[in-house]
Amino acid sequence: MERLSELLLLLSLLTFLQLRGSMAKWTAATATFYGGADASQTMGGACGYGNLYSAGYGVLTTALSTALFNNGGMCGSCYQIKCDSTKSSWCKPGGQTVTVTATNFCPPNYALASNNGGWCNPPRQHFDMAQPAWEVIGVFRAGIIPVYYRRVRCQRKGGVRFQVNGNPYFELVSISNVGGSGVICAVWIKGAKTDWMPMSRNWGMNWQSSAYLNGQSLSFRVQTDDGKILTFYNVAPSNWWFGGTYTPTLNF
Image 1 (spheres, rainbow, N blue to C red):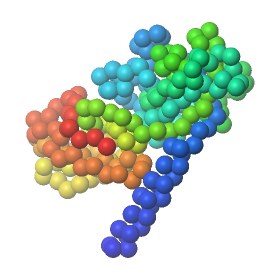
Image 2 (image 1 turned 180 degrees about the horizontal axis):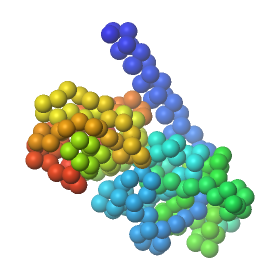
Image 3 (image 1 turned 120 degrees about the vertical axis):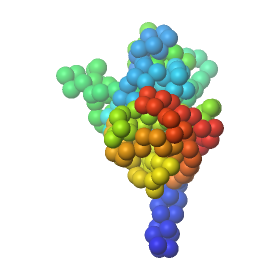
Image 4 (image 1 turned 90 degrees about the horizontal axis):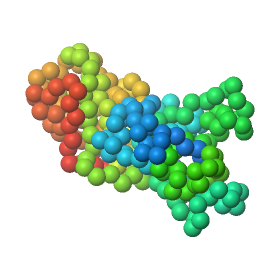
């Protein structure tokens, strides 16, 4: 057991160092935009956050290409993006940067060439940003711009949010508004009468369990991809209901 604890600690340290390195490095990519001037058409999406306004993400969001999305594993990650003015005259003057949260997937379009419309085809690293976020750094008429990006820590207010859906023998929990690394890599659930049970990723940031937990208060343990773990005790009271959202005050 002691050896296992040491290995887990080492793994967490290596993950943290890798993440810190990725946060410091600027990488070349490209960016387009979608969703309208008010970002109303960015709601929902492949991460399962639903209404991005109420989920805490607002209009500063982005969809990720296949090369960045990692089958939903990077949902919730935050990126600082700037237009590369050395390669384009369509950058806004002043060298502004914008920080966005990954909330959606930009699917490939193999009917178009990767350099002519198939912007999200692998192995391209591409951001399809919500229009209000894109217009911080790029001129609307451009349509597409070269950018540099780096991953940064997410700044969130109001605590992590747990929305519980499903049925009596299937809990599907959407977890949003995660600060720090922003990316969840493991989740556990506990009823008032049960031990901790691991959940599995269903899709995006929706995590599932097949336990019968009706009438029990629910606790959650969440691990982010920088190795940090937080435990949220009795997040949902014993009279919780499917479709309800429960928000403790803690955040990463």
